[in-house]
Image (cartoon, rainbow, N blue to C red; front, side, top):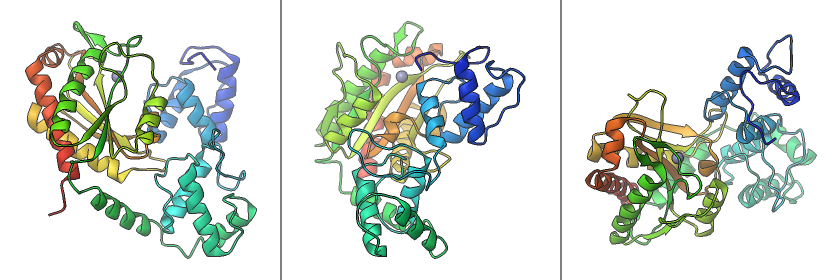
Length: 359
Ligand SMILES: [Zn+2]
């Protein structure tokens, strides 16, 4: 589906989406199935809210993909690692969560069946004596069902998160940090009050790169700061995974219809329906706190989101929205190099704190 669908649209596709939403418990009564009415708008927003997506009521490729993923419950289909065509879905989230609760470390609970999910599944299969084929099929589902009541969920995962957090706390020196300045040449992001998001985040990234390098970190940028070519969020995440980064930080600006909106928000991977990066959350909190201390900007808090850039990165990943270009005075601040320098210094402080050795 190339087109974005929203309130007021009439389309066969609206009828299809309505039927899919009904299947996953967001049922919307109506007299005209192919009309995107107010109630359908509310249902789409409720779904987006429940999934940690942007709540805009618009059905584009991301929301549609998540609606598709939501129809799978664990046991509906066999699951395995298929390089190049990774299985996505709520059943994968359930499987990952179950394995994790039982102490089989499959990495992030992200609903994507990757090699680490396969390794954890094989460990599980070995431990319960079913064929170690890495395929979650009838036998594995039966084994999971048998164990249903014997497992105290969450404890193993918590312990492992604590261990993981301690394991990165060896100082920022020699860490690999990927800085992702948002947008590119043909997509400048938010443009308001004479500022372009692509330029603002490039200026911050340049200063941040210098500061982190001075601390002895290896810094990788997802795109050149000048004349950036086309690169999407999936490719940016893949690059961070390829260089085996310890931390990923994506920089963006914000926009709002109200010119009064201001402030700085940080995001980490987290979806209300399952999947939460505790290490990402900790990184987001450290960076957010340090940036507010330097800039005295308004506090727009730290939030869990399931955006691709946060979901597909395997390391601690943070997106920082450094301010609203739609606010006149914040846009002016972001054009001021002294302020930009304070922002970069704050981000660097937070990153140093994140990696700071346990006392
Ligand atoms: Zn942006």
